[in-house]
Length: 65
Image 1 (cartoon, rainbow, N blue to C red):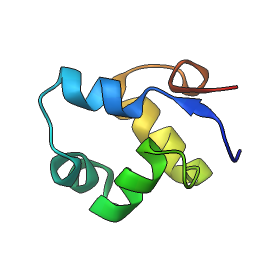
Image 2 (image 1 turned 90 degrees about the horizontal axis):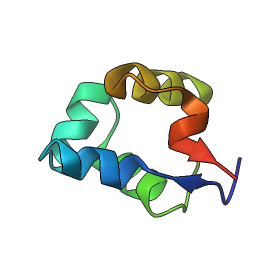
Image 3 (image 1 turned 135 degrees about the vertical axis):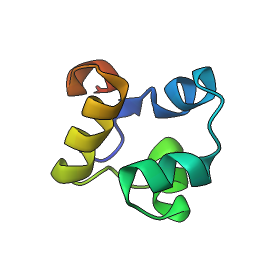
């Protein structure tokens, strides 16, 4: 999945959450959230499903090419 466009930062900011708050909700590190938001790393499949559930959106709507 490397290099995929993602809307994670936009969705997070719409809710007024910090990276740390999002990380806590997803049970991952703040550094992992930052790396996903900046496109340095793609989320694991498990994390992608958690993100999709948290924002009530399909994975493809959050992460796309």
